[in-house]
Image (cartoon, rainbow over all chains, first blue to last red; front, side, top):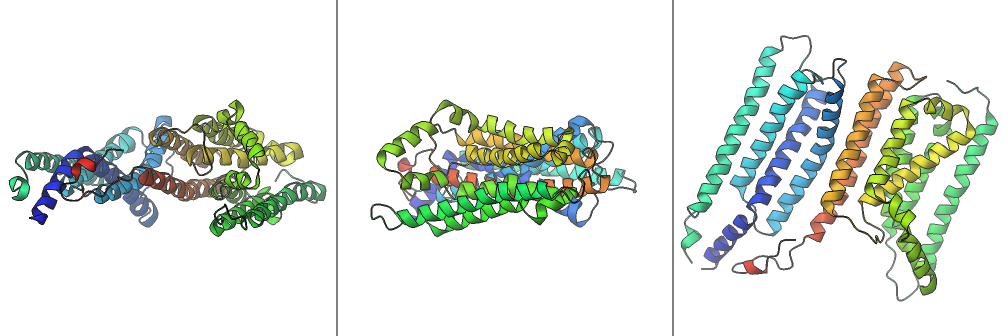
Length: 169
Length: 271
């Protein structure tokens, strides 16, 4: 009986903090992609340049804003996870949906507007860039689609009363 | 670079001018801890704060006294190490040491009231507002590195002293306007401080890349690039600490009153 009540309480908590779950995921996803971009492509592979001479002025501003924001998003997103956990309100499906959505949107923005229009830097230099751009942006689009599907599913789960226990008590 | 070698008087003056106050600050802080600790009505002062203060002051002093300060005059990368210490890490460590709280401990009620009134006065509230503090801090850096001020500072003793004091004080105001460790009379919300903080960090990052692309007057391209990278990534590392502390404060402030267990959902209150 107690487990059933716990489950019930958890579902209610989740529903109450649905938006916090979603935003925590979106923020962490954005921060995580920015972090990977920095460690993998800047520091380890040395594909990205710190500064590309063809960068337009607004590109420098956009890059600076997103870089600063990504630190806050990573740390803030994780503190939100900790907060949801202590409230027994962490909703994995909703969180992962948010994470993939945030990651995909930022990667797509980076791959199209920042790389191509603002020209802050290219994915790699001295290579045919098209395949790199395609992989980068298509994987971003896939993350967005999967993220949205997960969020819709999570909402549907909730409407239908997820799991077996929701109407048990 | 622009500074004739053998200018002993210049550095002798700055060593004494910055070195003596630094030692005095450490002395006063430790004395205040030792005097107030035996008092029964007060909690014991956490030793970690004393360590934080001493380290902070030593880092700040390292940037403006002795070999690092001399080398900064000719080497931009060293200058940038000094900037990170003086303008970012030292202010953070000093702020974490809660010097105002310690000062309040040493005062009697009458003086404490006076100090409290001073801290709530208009000028103090103005300079500790996050937007003003960010403009002083980041705006000051833009002024320093994108105008002739950087070169002038190395030739003129007065400018040298003023700029370095400004960098530390602006860094300190910036830190205490965002992280509430000492008592704060007019608190701003976490979201407000976060937004200002993000814009300020962006300003710092953009300036780093700007220096990389357009070296300050009299700085070679190689040195500017090294310095800019250090400013960008070193700044990131220290900012990460600040962000972590800010969000930890948020995390503590929204702690639910009751842990949510079965059936207890109504006790949950959104903070």
